[in-house]
Figure 1 (tube, helix red, strand yellow):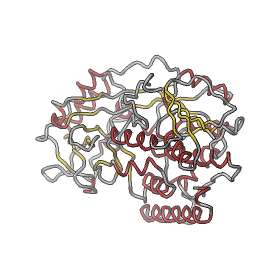
Figure 2: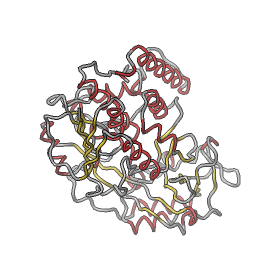
Figure 3: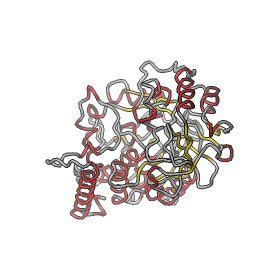
Figure 4: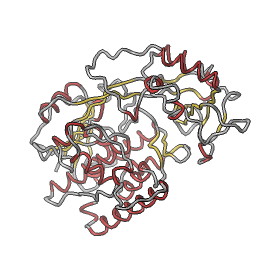
Amino acid sequence: MIVNIIGGGLAGCEASYQLLKRGFSVNMYEMKPKKFSPAHKLNTLAELVCSNSLKSNDVTTSEGLLKQELRMLDSLLIKIADKVAVPAGSALAVDRNEFSIAVTNELLKYDNFKIIEGEVTDIDLSKPTIIATGPLTSDTLSKRIAELVGEESLYFFDAIAPIVAYDTIDFDSAFIQDRYNKGTGDYINCPLNKEEYDNFYNALISAETVELKDFENKKVFEGCMPIEILAKRGYDTMRFGPLKPVGLTDKMGKTPYAVIQLRRETREYDFYNMVGFQTNLKFGEQKRVFSLIPALKNAEFLRYGTMHKNTYINAPKVLTRNFQLLSYPNVFIAGQLSGVEGYVESIFGGLICGINMCNLLQNKPMVDLPIETICGALQNYIATTSPSNFQPMSANMGLINNLGYKVKDKKEKYKILSDRSLDLLAKYIQEGDINDRI
């Protein structure tokens, strides 16, 4: 049987793998390379368009726990991310080109996998379909999806951080260190004293931004807040956010007033991402303002930051907890379009849609993961949140914080939550027929 998957991003690729390995055929509809969104550049599948980091690998954090759960559920994309990882302290960051190529090549190994290039403008509701077009769904398809769900699609803004060339960083004004020394010297730190911070702050809040003419409702997702908007919230806001100096000491052994961190983009020491510096400043303004950072005074910007539209649906109103459309049960919505937010969360959405599409077509029970797991909690969130106040959700410990008793120490509490989650997921997998369910 053939399943149509619309979209070759993280969710679409993970869903494809889950179907392919179970013997189903997949027709993947991908508009690249015939048409690119404003943020996409590569011809290959599973392109990371924002950061190259999949966040923490520490299982006592929500991000690390989610990745570990996905490893247990045999996620192809997490497996590949582990293989092409670049040093990033306690985080899992990847060489984005190698990652995209590896995912594409792995799927192409299957004879029952076919890529159909070109933009999809309509959906054949008579065929089993997974829509995984992500936050950058084309305008034409967005309108068609809006018709299916019975309301206008919702959207918010997302922003991309700049990338600088390694050999143009001034190391007389920078130092290498991971926060709290957790890592192998994977971050370049660009410190600011108070005077330098003042100059940078004042230039940033007064810099010119790109006018967003195409959108009516200017929503910004908190997890990808443009640095200039964050700065305008208050003088110290950045110093308690992406510029926090906590856990870092400069060459003199002192804690700087503020620190900009740079993280490797590739396995080679050539491209570095400005961590937390998503922005909508005009390109010339980015060069001017960010060059006020002493370590970046002569930096070559290999990619400037940009802002783009993210599209998502009001999931609690139109989806089941299995990511099926209520009105069309053979149509699933995977990834960020469904209302989960983040790379790894999108991978999870693709995984659960792929598995449950298999089960639907074989008249088998759906995979309904325990709500005490991060994966199960995300399933629960998209189905049970109030439709009147629905916003995209990243993995967080608050989703599973229902121990029934208080634990004062946060680290201890998160470890208890993590251990419980992994134990319950292992039990869930063992009790079912792993070949059919997982």
